Length: 156
Image (cartoon, rainbow, N blue to C red; front, side, top):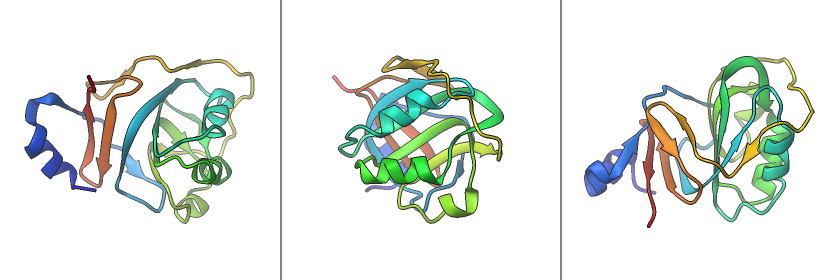
């Protein structure tokens, strides 16, 4: 994978650059792939169900409303994502199991951590446009991520 700085040099203003300053939690800091989205707030049932499906190198972008009240992903869900072929997870929310998560071979970007478990009611939406950090993530767009940040390229 090319560094995001080089990707930006190649595509320029065709890209959106996310201004949210994420932390890296998985063992991979660089990843890219086609976007699938979930919007959920303090409830990870739909997120988990999505990662239980075949990832085929995709990246799950989760709009958790920026909440740090509960964790939406821990090491078990991250391992599920790896087992199903997902390239990465971008979480506008919190994770847990940080030490274990750091050993899972997947890219995970999130705002922070909280040991508190999420609700399990199944509320939320899948495959919709989600926005944060001055970027709109649309299903089937492409995301590029590394230590420098996140870029999004709209596909035709």
